[in-house]
Amino acid sequence: MASVHVVTRVVLGLAVTQWPLHGSSLRWVSLAFVVLVALLWGGLDGIRDARTAVDEESGADLTMMWLKAAALAGVLAGAVTWLIGTISGIAVGDNTLFFELTSGAAFTILLVFLPAMLAVAVGRFLVRRKAPATPAHVSPGAAGAGAAGAYASEQDYDVVEAAEENYEASEWSYEHGTGQAYDESDQGYYENDQAAQQQAAGDQSADGGRHYVDDAPTEVFEAIKPENGK
Image 1 (tube, one colour):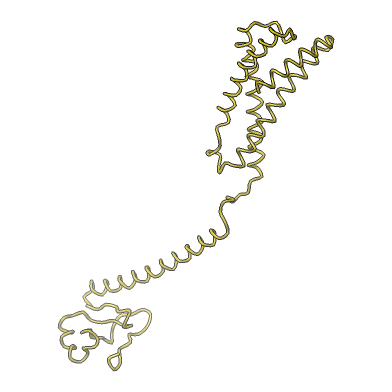
Image 2 (cartoon, one colour):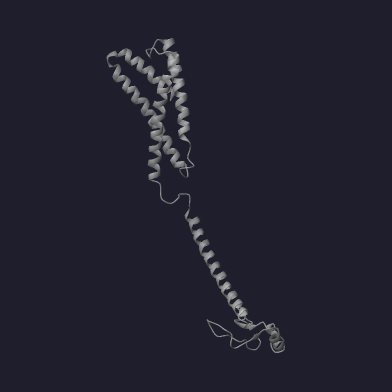
């Protein structure tokens, strides 16, 4: 940007010397040119940053970058332009070096920073407006794996819930003094009473000392008594 401003001022000095009656128009054209360069450059930065950043927070700090660039362009362009006007005699202005490094540099900073920031904002807005609603980095395979994992988790939850219901039924029978509990492996209710187990130990040793009863409480199906020790 410093070179753009230096070249523009040199060309403007040569053009004013050649066409002195059109000095005002040439100055406006030069001003429009340097502003257009800042607009295009800032717009390209905004578009590139919006395309590469994952979200708004992870984007580059283009504000500080363009502020530093504008400050450097203002000071450097002022010093180089003053030097060219001193050694070459081109009509780039009769300003002193102090003026070029202060007021002239401040004006150049505004001509660089403000258009660039406006273009950065517009470029980011145009890219993010056309962005899809779903993140592009999520592949269909990952989405399918996530759905399968959710289904598996739901199945595991059903198994745990069924086990908790069986456990609660057993606790209810203990709390109400029935001494009966549900055995899912043998498909029935059994008594855990020690005396009943000792009495049935001889007849039903294969059942681990569990004595099946006929009046076992159930809400789903009737109790199934093992036959032939199975």
